[in-house]
Length: 259
Image: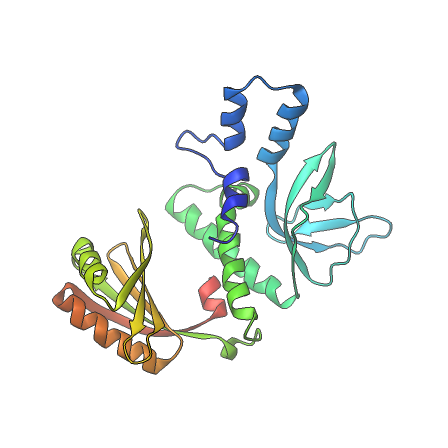
């Protein structure tokens, strides 16, 4: 949910491809000034930037699209800054809320975004990277959520943050959903058209030890340790029985998660 409100106001589009700004302009008789402001909001871009070494100017480069932007305000950037950029009167303004991170994250962000971009182009149709970044800003919000979650407790070293994951094929997703929902060991924490997320509570310690994602006829169990995964697999298999078939076990680091 990180960044949802910002994405909804700026980048959301309905089934006809219209943004909230479009809908508001259609429903109200606006002044030229108000209409121009809504167009600025509509055309804004949420992305990651690095500063270019240009004297007397504040110029940043979008690390995904490689486009340069001259900013009205000057501030220090020692690594990468993630922010929304608005174009006003030919110049660019960054939103007040900026996410600063060290250079080490630049490679991770570029790798993750390129993989999602290539995946989209192969599944649907080729588009320009700038159009993809604008249309799929939620990808970047997701990356930041993963980074924020791990960086507070762990360093960037791949070995410092590991997720033990087990993947199953589900024969009947609806039946699996019902079985997990009625079982007291599982807590439904997210439920929408894309899928459902459950938390598994350990009876011994009454703490959440696993996150279970049920979507697209797949079930994924994510835990912090191998022992927790073994326990979670046993409980899940007891509840779902022959409705699931084990596919694989993996140990993932932050690079894998972003990719």
